[in-house]
Length: 339
Image 1 (cartoon, rainbow, N blue to C red):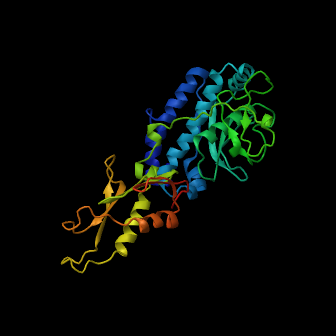
Image 2: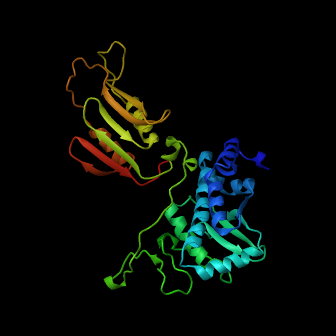
Image 3: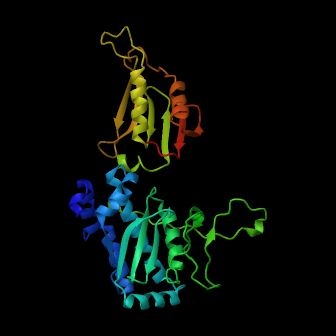
């Protein structure tokens, strides 16, 4: 059935999922070493891809995103088993697994769920992981969601609540509370408006899981889909714009080359300014800088390029927000994903 999938996704399944060297297989093995049971992930890839493909216009991010969420599932269950805070919960889990199928069924999650959700199905004696048709959430939110679900995993009725409203406020903590234990660390929520400071609960340090190297795509793909974008402008000759978002630089280059003023004194009929993209020194095939300088420099030693149009374009057209300047250097940031 995998023949129905795009070639890139089939390759990523082979390299990032099925390969013994993949982070997914390493997570499965780590949990098996502690739990004593191998929880095998079961995925109908054509079904999952058909349901979620609208959220992954860039096919190269599909398998890495699924792998990241699944790795977090295995990591949070392993953390819970290693913790001394959940002895009764662990015994209950071992009891149900003794007769269970020891598998994690990964499937699309229907509305209104808007975050990854895991549950235990008593009829099939299997774990289930539902993936919603939404933007893949950050690791910290996935961790918080799984901790909430694991808290209620073995409760009659499965994972808590039919809806996921407000789940963004969950704060993942190393000491997530188990059911019915007042002495254990408690989960907190982010409080946005509190009139009494005494109502604010102490929040422990948030935790997150570093992605595996195999989960990360190339820089031009990775940073196109990850905010914030960072942009700097350094005044001089040449004027240099550096940015983590390649498409931003490409638009700047195309715009100022298109509307650049023609130098009538130049026998080659070039624009007054040369606007060029610069390939990154970190990796090939990725432009992370843009230079602007006069085409003819022999009379322009020390020439200062007027940056106002570029600055206005960065803020007014691209929507970047300035975070620092000293009059010669500017630092901008955008928290909006730009398509």
